[in-house]
Structures are given as C-alpha cells and as structure tokens.
Image (cartoon, rainbow, N blue to C red; front, side, top):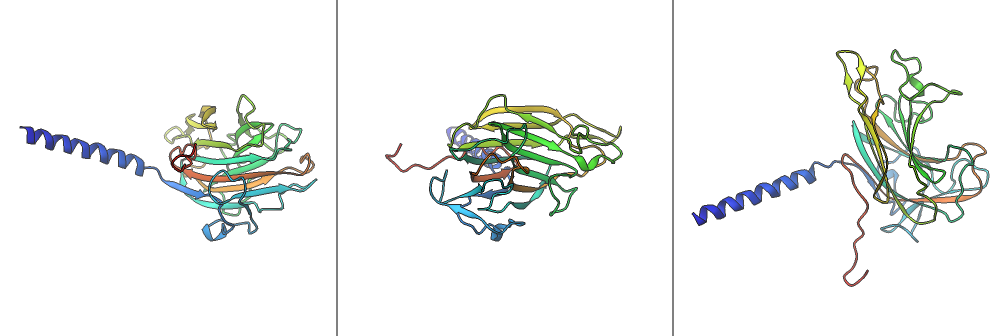
Length: 283
C-alpha cells in the first residue's frame, strides 16, 4: 500500500509539473528585442536602416536604442523609425522600457508625441499608421500613458467607423492614465494589453467585448473592457504589424530632446517587468 501511495504521489507530481510546463509553454513570444546592437534589419525589422545603440545607462543588457530630435524637427535623426511583422493575433501584450531625457517637455497640446503602433491584416506591410482600417497607439502624452485607436479608413465601409466620428479628418478613442506617470529621467516599464472584440455574425453586429489595459511600473493605470475595434466588415481582422516610429507633428516639438527604448517584448500573455539578474552578494 505504501508503494502504491508513493507511486500515486509521483504520478500526481508529474501531472502538476506537466500542467505548469504546459501553462508556461502556452505563452507565444511574437517579438523580442533588447536593442543590444544595431543589426535590427538582420532580425526582421524593416522600413528603417539607421540605429544608434548606446551602451551607457541602459536598463538591461549591452545597449538600448536612442531617439534624439534636433530643434524644430518632427522625426528623430539618431535612429530610424522601424517596423516588424508579427504572427497574426486577436490579442497581444507588449512590454518595453522607456526613459525620457532630463530636459524632456511635451507638445503643449493634448496630443503627440506618437511612439509605438500596431496595424492589422487589413492593411499592407508598408501602410502608414495615420489612416488605416485600425491603428493602435501606445505613447506618453503630457506625462500620462495613453492607449488609443483610430480607424479613419473605414468611413465609407457599410458599418462605418468604430473609433468615433471624423473631426477635421481624424478620429480616435483615447484612454489615458488618471495620473502623471512620466515626470523624471528614470527608466519606466510600460505594458499594454489589447484584445479584439468578437462578432455576432448571425445578427451582423459587433460585440462590445474588446479591451485595453495599461500598466506603468507594474501598476494597472488603464482598463476599459467594453470596446468595439472591428465590425463584421472585417471578420478576419487580426493584428500583425508593430511600428516603433517616434514622431512630433510639425511645430509641436518644444526643443531638442531625447528618449531611449529598451527590452521590448510582444507576446500572447502578459510578460511583466524585466527581472534583472544579480550576482551573489550584490543588492
């Protein structure tokens, strides 16, 4: 009996172990980039070729990517904006670290700078983010984290726009953190989750069950769970392209300034903050 009991215990342990292993393996990493060197094109990045990788004051690893704006510019000149194709997905999580220069200032408006975006299978790999069937925004604005979406290209579709009416040729729904979270020149961990809403194909309707969540330094600061991102006009829509394209609109850059990005991961489950490895005896 004791032998059978031991065998049962071993079998149970194996099942638990397998369940944990299966849970871990269910996380699909869609993109991982530490910016330790400038060979981004060799790792599948495109639509950009010049990258400044700096090795001092990185968050982790050997390097991070630097974006510096000269005075009165719109695009940074030290590194190119750049894109990466992803395995198409209905849901994703993104995590990266951002640091703003000590002299960083905002546009003086309720918008800009743009920073990171996602596009869908309904647009091509070279399509711009400004007017699309669905563009997502993950960016710091006036010290807060902003998550948002636009779908201006759908204005003439049978079921129309999902992200609000056009105003001055633009539309969008925005979700900002309540508090200012970017007010120093330290590294901050930005995370976001987006999930496409489902469709009621029988009744030709969109269900209000899409969601966005945002975290800064492991604290939930944005949550909205009743979003419509797509309609039955796009029954197979999925997200499949990531853009890292820092940009201030014309006349909106307050002065020359810099930001840095490090330890970027996009996955199908929440990644969480980067856990630095410490040597024994170090704090």
